[in-house]
Image (cartoon, rainbow, N blue to C red; front, side):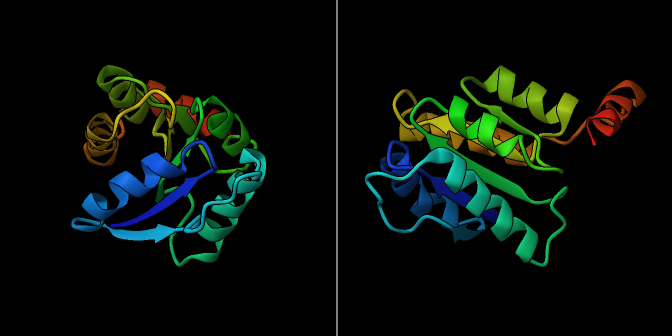
Length: 145
């Protein structure tokens, strides 16, 4: 599975700390490999989406991790783009529900509040939880398009 990783300056340290472990299982595409002190998460979101769109993968089936300070800005900025369904992950239950019910394709995390071990656990849930096939969830996801 191809996995896109992105982070602004506030999420860079966490991204770097989990990248090696993720690379053991996934084909990692790190779109922010260099620390940039004064970057802005809206521009990182655009770069992430541009990279997804320019890949061979359908934007709806790709998976991405985007880390900023709180995780909130990354989610808001990512959700501006068609085909992206981003949600902030702060605990296992919410990440699982976000995958099942809304079929998120971008998991955003807080570089300030999430430790590497917890991040890896949340990412594993994100990557292994299937989307619900229940008609109500499918209908709602379609309404977002």
